[in-house]
Length: 319
Ligand SMILES: [Zn+2]
Image 1 (cartoon, rainbow, N blue to C red):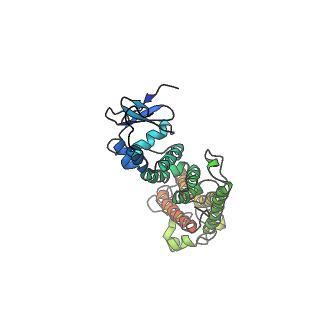
Image 2: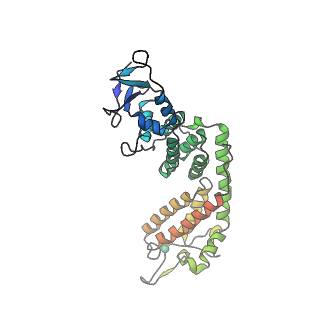
Image 3: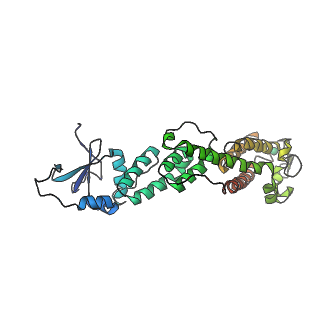
């Protein structure tokens, strides 16, 4: 066996009253009081009467009891930081998803309810969800965390319907995956309605003048120039019965395709950002100055309608 190494601060305190040794041989010198306050498991463990000196096979080091833990040092470090008061150890970040699972297992084993709540918060962290919705889904589902599972499924709508292989796929069952894909497909169908009937749009703007940025060949009073962006000819997207400006038609065509796979408000907002860059690059004296404001309003509206369309759809899964 390798020689034990000492954990880093604050788990190397000279006045600590117990040593926890991780599975990989790292010794954490900790205060029983903090652990007892955080966990009924530790409270019971440390409350057990001590055998008289010499009568116990309890391993001792520097006069302190050494308790062998089955967790590795990384997991132990993370959950001990949760147990300690925040003035001594800041809550660790759980951006790393693989860590979440082992910390959650330890939290449950040692009845660390507070940590379980914090792990749930970490799984609901938008940063984690935006980068790894599918992995978050698998972890949350595996841990039977309903709210977190549903939220992750929702974020996963930004991704294609058929997932690519991911590290945690074996944490879930084929039924779980089928439920996720079915949910995704239902959202696609629901959102398609918005692209086929633009009533939500005409209702919002009221009339053609309510969105004159959309008209092709518009005139700029200041520069005295006309928009030269051209007319869109795809009559699926004629909200007022006449040809809109071409780049908006292109945007709608693109979004129509994307929503067949990724039915999320995020999809239409990112596509709008690309359109804004493109239109600005084209340097139309009428459009480039106002495209950002107008397309932001428009894509926010569409994103809102998408959210409304998918809100009633349920992820059918028992918890
Ligand atoms: Zn233009």
